[in-house]
Length: 151
Image (cartoon, rainbow, N blue to C red):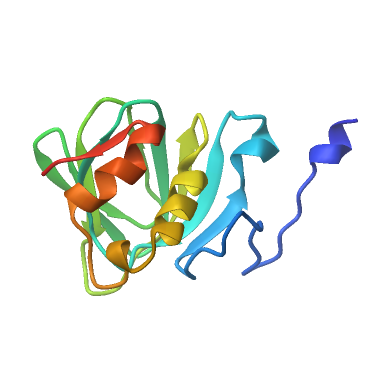
């Protein structure tokens, strides 16, 4: 039945997962909810994400609030609220705050799996949060998801 996959989340609600993710990450649709096609998260970008490449998934971002800084294909861009970007797989990029106010975004990965990677990071513990992380620490965790951070 099609209604078996229906999900309704009220403001502030999130899908439960294998582990509890930090508050900036609210999973709205898990990979298994969409039969692997995508995952959808509401993310408040409290920390910059270093240059990395997704080798398996396209990443799509819709900026809900604030301004998102994006380094893509040699350019530094500011993506304001109400804007959408598609970061195709295979192209290195970095994400950050364009102002002091952390942007809030909808982040879609296709195919899904992004929330599983974040759960693996959360399980890795203090080595990957909250005071920072290095590509050397991230790459072994990211590798199964086709993600590679530049060192």
